[in-house]
View 1: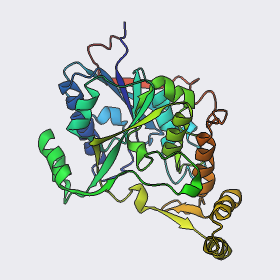
View 2 (view 1 turned 45 degrees about the vertical axis):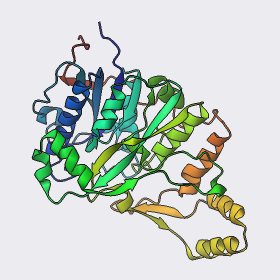
View 3 (view 1 turned 180 degrees about the vertical axis):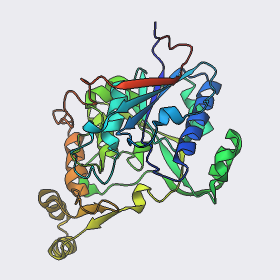
View 4 (view 1 turned 60 degrees about the vertical axis):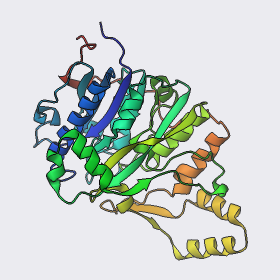
Length: 353
C-alpha cells in the first residue's frame, strides 16, 4: 500500500542540451535534493516530466546514475510523447512547454503538498530544514526568494553538498525579492518575482486553480504569477519565508535575459501623453484593451506575445475581486485522460509498488 508522501516536487526536463553539461547538472541537482530531504526525513517524491523527448537522444531517466537515498524519497520520471507538443505556436523552435509539463506532474503528484521546481536550482539547507518541521498549513501558499549565483566555471558540479551551497551563497549576484506592483494594476500585493521556482501549496489547492494556465504558445509567460493570484482568490494566505531561499546558477537562457517589450511609435506617444496628464488609469486600461506593449522572447522572434497588462494584470485584477469563476484551464488539465509511460529510478520505503 502506498502511503501518501508529505511533499511532491515537480520538475520538467528534456534531453536537448538546454545548458552546458545539462545531464550532469540535472543528476547533481537531483542528488543534492534527495540527500537533503533524506537528512531531514521528509517523506517525498521528485517528479521529473520528460516533455517531448528528442528521438535521437536517450531518455534522461536512462542517463541517471545512482541518486543514493536512504528511504525517504522516490524519484519518478514521466514521459510525454511528441504528439502532445506538436502544433503549439512555436513548437518547431522550442521543444519544451513548461506549463503543460508542470501540469502533468502536478496532476499525478501524490503528496499532500506540491511545489514546481526548475530542476537546475538548489534549495538552501534552511529551506529543507523548514520543510522537515512538517508545519505546512493547507490554507497557505508559501514563497521564498531566488538568489542568482554566477559561478566562474563548471567545477562547482564536483563539489560536496555543503561546499556547493556555501559557494552558491558566496557567489550570489542578485536576489529576486519582493517587488512593489503599480497601484494602477489594482491587484493583491503578492510576491510574484521569480515565483515559478517555488510556489508551495496543498495539492488540493493546485487542483482547485487547475494548476498553470493554458497557453497555446510555447512561451508560457506569467503563468506562475497567475497561479499565485488564483490561489489567493481561492482563499490562500501568502507566507513569505525570508531566511530560506533557492539558488540558481545563471546561464544564457535565464528568463530576464531574453524577454523584451515591443512598442509601436503611436503606443509610446499615447502612453507618455496620458501619464504626463495624470491619466495613468486610462493609460493602463488602454494597455489591457489594445494589448500593448507586446513582448518578444529571444530565439522565438516569430511569436509576438501578449502584453503583461493583457496576459497578467487583467487576470490578477479579476482575482483581486475574488472572481473564482475565471478558469485558467480545462477540466482535464495535465493530460488527465492520458496514460503516460513512467519509470521510478529511486523508490522510498513508504512507496510500495
